[in-house]
Amino acid sequence: MKLIKPKFWDKNYLTFQSLLLYPLTFIIDLISLMTFFKKPKKYTQIKTICVGNIYLGGTGKTPLVIFLAKKLKNKFKTIIIKKKYQSHLDEKKLLENYNKVLFDNDRVLSLSKAIEKKFELAIFDDGLQDKKIEYDLKIACFNSISLAGNELRLPSGPLRESLNNLRRYDAVFISGQPDNKIFLRKIKKINPKMPVFICEYVPTNFKKFKNKSYVTFSGIGNPLGFLRTLNKYGIKRESNLIYPDHYEYSRTEINKIKKLANEKNLKILTTEKDFYRIPIELRKNISFLKIEIRINNLKKFNRFLSKYL
Image (cartoon, rainbow, N blue to C red; front, side, top):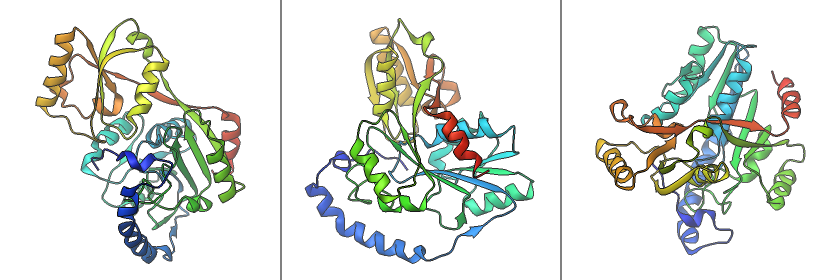
């Protein structure tokens, strides 16, 4: 999905736009009820972890999937499963740098292939709302910038499902450093036993971008997170361009960015996801910030993980 989030989604009060769209939200809720009572299937031949979100886009799912795959592939024969969307080829390419990936139109089909090939663990990048599979471990991701936005469901807000559905899941991950104690209390009220893990994005190659100035660009779900990372690690930018999530860069668009950089005598820097969306022949002189996730209380998370695997 190519998406630029409407600003009213993240307001902490009810807006006219939200009220206007709420009838559509109501209709979507009624349609969702049709699948609510369907019983998901448990697959005992393989362990399953689903890393998903309730807030639409930009919650740090993919870095967490990569972290889990790297951590667990020495213990289990591990496969990553991502549902096939043509606009998500960038994420598939990124995931393939770290682990084998199955990329089919149906997650059940991918899981069946994984079982047939004797994989022992399947890590799903997204899929909490896919009720056909009963996952062994279900993780809901948020980012500290947006959290749950206005807490309304699509399209009057950014939520794929009600925040109250957190009671069905096993853990919450919040990327960044949340100072919103109200949101944390809300999670605990919904599910008092819910473990909440705080993590942050850490650039592993930032030192080589110091002491230079850049044109930066991104087409991701949370572009503000990218900018905050640049600021935190002292990477200078003079121009920044923001595109819709999963934006597919054309030759014309990349040439415009390169022309802007040449005119201002700047280097070009983007995210790793965006880099893999650029046609190979156009990637010259474009660098990307390589990010990995760091969990604040790793020992606690390891103990939590061992209960499910």
